[in-house]
Image (cartoon, rainbow, N blue to C red; front, side, top):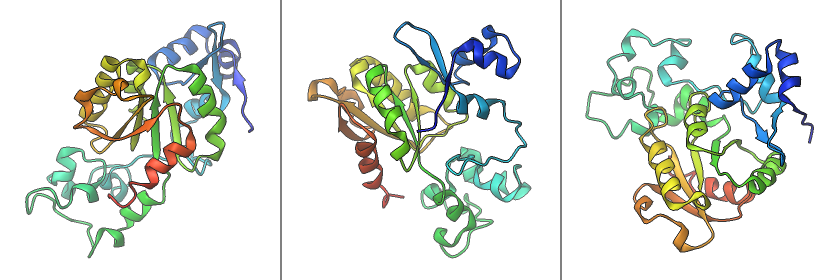
Length: 249
């Protein structure tokens, strides 16, 4: 696995900024980082390069998924006049085809729709992209194990360790699934699950709770979760969960 981790000082030199600026990026959630046993930050060099890459520079990473709404897809990044009155636009729905049959007649203008969604260029574009998975856990052993397994993943994965980081990362990484570790405590896992479900940026996220026994799963989440998996879990368990839901869309 070709991966290099940098100290905050090394990252600062590479970006021509101060180490304090690197720490601010980490604390704000825009720059992912992990902690060593001694409490020091370590930054994946690839995450740093993605952050400082110019916005107009095309990505060469085949696994990178640049999120676009349907109206941005057809409007080259901007909403077209015909889209602004459509229910999909007004709801900021992440995927037009997932709400097409659930809105009042006439409110989805279907400006670009063809006979079926599967014939739609936007539908094909989205389905050719990898699935985004967000893992929320403060178990550093589990984090390390997942990071070592990501080379075998056929989906994009990000790992955060608190509710704040979870919120900030969603702005650029729109997860399709969120794996919430119940070992953080019933109240914390419940709060994070509800926060994700209520986040308007990700209206169709599927929440998966991970626990070792029935007592760990908060009962209050039963109505909003998509599935449960057992701890400790790895990439294979996440993949099985995703593969089991492919026919839902």
